[in-house]
Image (cartoon, rainbow, N blue to C red; front, side, top):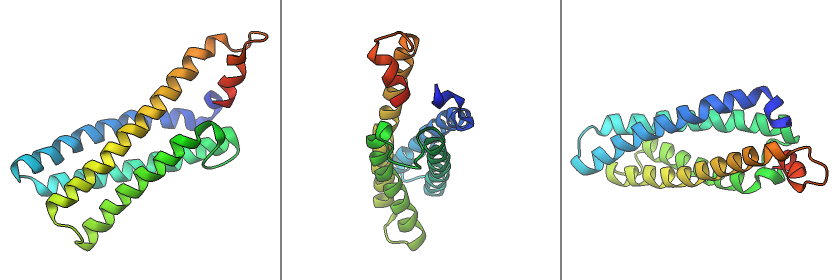
Length: 155
């Protein structure tokens, strides 16, 4: 499969669980701040770290998409995943802008982080489902007349 031949596949495979772990830690810190009012700085820093990891995985993901599909974003096989990824990026970027310009107080800022995280969860689910579907259809690839063999390369 073309996707597995790309060097960026390994990078994505490493960064995705790292991003998820950073997300979980940050989510706990954000919830803790909202529940107790404590550790605002830790919560804010954790969202910034999550955003940096997000940008990293988005850039390397774009390079993977270019390597596999010939375009940096919005390849037909990943169109809706990329659309939602743009919303995830927009919300995380809005968080950074609001943080560094003091446009929002601490609580609304954390609610913005939670909105960004909610879209991230949707987007992560999209990619997990896409990966699962590709893996399930992979053993059928190459069988003559099997439509799944065409979809493995296209999806």
